Each structure stands twice: as C-alpha cells, then as structure tokens.
Image (cartoon, rainbow, N blue to C red; front, side):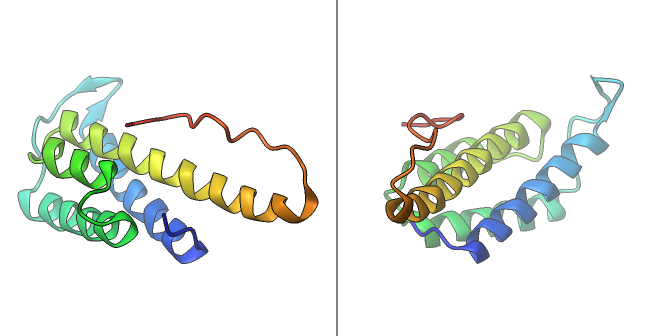
Length: 118
C-alpha cells in the first residue's frame, strides 16, 4: 500500500465529503433523507474508486469491497464507504509509524487496525 502524506490528505478529504453527505441527511440522529443528489454522490464515488485503485489496484480488498457495496446514494452505502476510507486511513497512519519506528526501534500500537475488511 502506498503510504505518503498526499494520499492520506486525499483520503481525509474524501472522508469529509462523505461524512458531510451523511450529516446533511440526519437531524437529531433520525434519517430525514434517504437519497442524496445523484450527481454529487457519483462524483464522490468515482473519486474514491479512483483513489483506491491507485493505492492497491483492482485486487485490493478495499477497492473490491467499495466497488461492490457502495453503489447507491443512500446513508447505508455512504456509511460503508466511510468505514472503508477510515480503514485505509488507519493503514496509511500505521505504515508511516512503522517506517518511522524502524529507526527508533520503538513499539507502537498498530498491530490490529480499528476497522478491518480482511
């Protein structure tokens, strides 16, 4: 997996966009809107798909899961996409910590990621 700051920033930006979609659809924890603007959702989905493909290729489990499970502009699919993006962000963060700790030989808590799709 590619682990550079630019990719982490893109993952964060796409996560924020998806989270904004979900937050706009909720008022006091209740879903008030089942679907979002299809064009905006399609642009977001394409951007996430492109990034996941660039990170891990078409055989990557994150790419496959996102392509399979995030298809419709609804809260359920968006939340699945957000979980996948959070998992990618955790992996990028842990990869950065591991590469930095190779020099310091310190122990970091990155053995088990918070969200796993394997």
